[in-house]
Image (tube, rainbow, N blue to C red; front, side, top):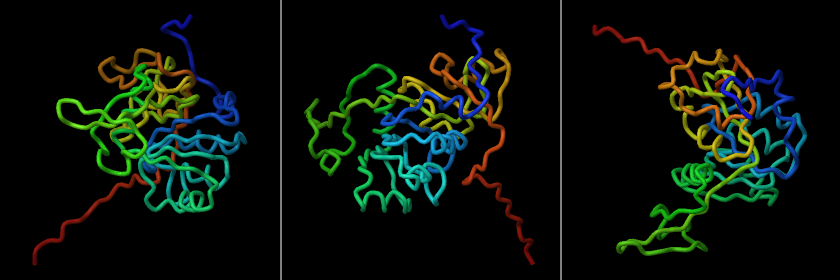
Length: 240
C-alpha cells in the first residue's frame, strides 16, 4: 500500500533505469532541448537497451538530448510532432533504420493525456483534409468532419521537474511544463529527475503541477546543461 509519506527517491540514474528492457515504449518529456530529463536520457544509452519506441515532441537536435539515442542506434520507431533540423533523425529515416509517425503537436499531447485518463480514442478536427487524415477513421459530427486518434500509453516515462518532494509531487519550471505531466500519467512507470528535492509538505498544494500518485522513482539531479536556456541582456544605447 502506498502511504502518503512513501519515499520514492533512488540513489542513482542506473538504479532508476534498472527496469528498462529492450523493445519498450518510452515517453519522454521536454520540448526541443528545453525541459529535457538530461541525465536519464544519457543513462538510457549507458543502460544498453535497444529496439525502443520513442514518443516525444521531437527526438533531440544538434546532436544533443534524444539525438544521442538515434546516434547510438537504440531506437526503432519514433512518434513525434516535429523533426526540424534534427540531422540524426533525417538520416535514420532515410536509411530505413527508424520508422517515424508524425502527429500534430496538440494531438500528440492529447493522445498522451487520453492514455493517462483511460480514454481509448477521441475525435479531433486537427489534420482533416491533410495527409494526417490518410488511413484513419473519420466521422461527421454536427456537420463537421473529425479524425479518430488513438490514445498513447507507454511502458516508461522519463520526466524532468524543477522541484519534487520525496513522494513525487512535482512542480515544473515554466515552459518545461509541456509534455512532462502527460507523459508521466500515460506510462506504467514514471521516472523523474528533479532539479530540487525537498521534504514532503514543502511544496504548497496549490503549486503541485503533478500529483505524486503518478510518480514511481525520483533521482535528484541538481546540475543540467539546459542547452537552449540562456540569459540575454541587451544594453540600451543612449541617444546621441
